[in-house]
Image (cartoon, helix red, strand yellow):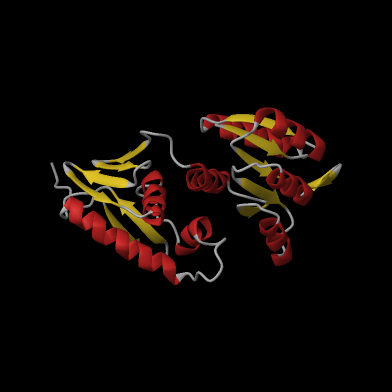
Length: 232
């Protein structure tokens, strides 16, 4: 997938290019609003990582123009502007997410992948594998051995996140920010509700002999690949 990075700080642009290429993306970096719109017209990027303040204009205007001209891929603001009104303006302009500098690169990649999955869908046949647990993203089906279960879109997104970060706790806040923050009316409790749904479905297919979602006190939820294993 090709990613357009719009960033006028050369060091940050270089960091993003190297990091995203290491994650398997093709990356084009530009440093002005004009160049961003030209590249978007020519190459139709799958996603855009966009600074708010650019030498020749505002990232808000770039975002609005991209949406007005039919760009459907994720747009993520990456900005030093950290006021609530700045975030609100970015999301109102059509962005999918707003990440404040300084930022954690791993978090940016995780959010980018989540938004790509949500907006563009998973390619046919795309699978995630964690131990013996397999998730078919295109049909939202999880299976463990011969036992399968269908998932809702949001359950599949949550399981995909946990599988990609298997054996690492993810906080409620991080899960909420990735999956629900842009939806009005949702509260943090929705994370617990969907973790409960997903735990039930995993229990149905693993029969307590495979991965399970565990609560790590003070740190969040984690897909434990050692759950149900027996010592050798």
